Length: 170
Image (tube, rainbow, N blue to C red):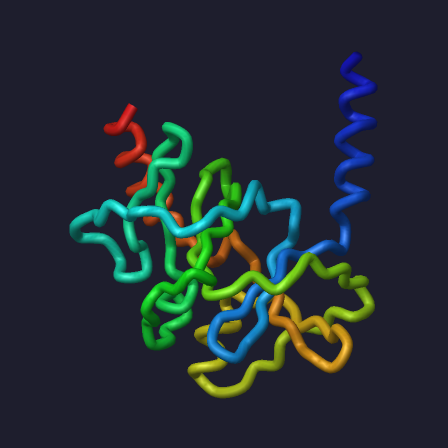
């Protein structure tokens, strides 16, 4: 039985390999490995949390589970935008924590081969700031997508603070 489960997990990993949920923020397209993605949901009412980083917008109640949400635009130090009907939340699981990423617009699930991914160039300071979340650039058709490392998007101390809030909720 345990062997069958391992085999099933390996098959699932193979099916997810090279697949990225892509979304648009500003004029840029970003991708996140589908293996991190739990689901995509519409915007929800957000409960603000006092004294947290500005990119942590607050908490949502997703089917009884309290989940923190992060605005990707604000995390990348872009101007915040008014949320629209295209704005949605990508619910991801990172470092054993479920977190929502607020994005402007979902693009598609894209299959990107390893040989189509190159490391990001180290340019000016502003680029470096964004590159600390980007582990690769993917060429797909005539566009370039910035591939995100979700584990770098969220600071360790943010996760600890979020876990404390979630523990209080339970």
